[in-house]
Amino acid sequence: MAEYKITLSKTDEDILENDLTDIDSWIQSAVEGKINKCWLRMQEEWTNKLMNDESFTDPIPSNKPDFISLVTARSDYVKAKDKKSVM
Image (cartoon, rainbow, N blue to C red; front, top):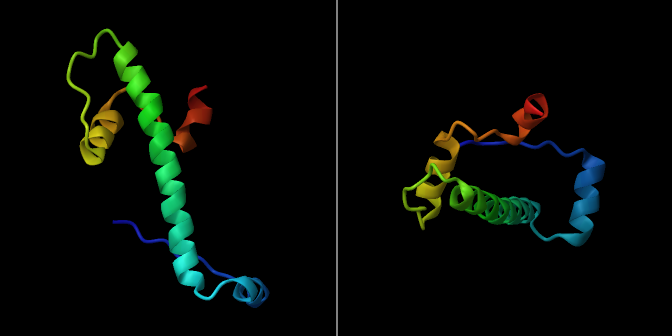
């Protein structure tokens, strides 16, 4: 599991505390929301790619971990940070 650390200036912390009762919970919820949106986009993109790939004849996994393992192991999978250099 990866851990990430963010640093807020005192000014930014004061701004957030004006609206939020728990900054840490809000950050966690924001990250979880982003992960869910990314998952939905990835699932849709790769389900379409797999279904249209005539050389792919295996079943498409119905659970997230197996689906992610399948996709990220493929030779045509490229992480977002590497897509610019591929194009």
